[in-house]
Image 1: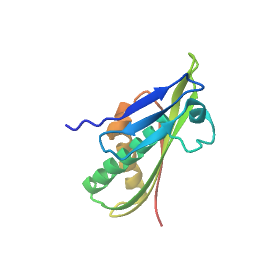
Image 2: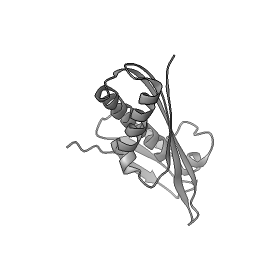
Image 3: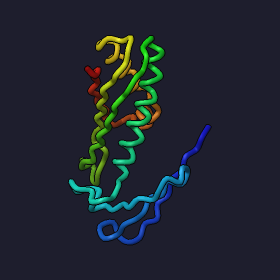
Image 4: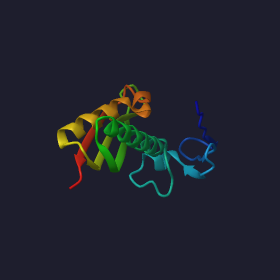
Length: 146
């Protein structure tokens, strides 16, 4: 199976330091990371582990959902997926990912709203990224376009 890698070069303390995360498998880019910007409302041009998890989860969910729509007898059209990853305080100290909310609006044929929502829920439970994130509350809002 495929192995994907990323690496980070970090310099300095948590509060004053910063780093660069490089997507080494794909070579698609290097992005700035900073703890103060990670926890701020405005990311100010930096990414964060939570944003990268959101990207991974949204794309994984879309792929899984596309496969399950077809398996259920539907014809996948367009899937607009958004993943929102929340970083919050950990009662034991520090921080934790306190939740992930998936939103999907689908253009498809062959499934009604109820069937689509069932398939979307199944995709939420079974996409590999969801499986990797067990222990985190994942919620879903699924609707058909039009």
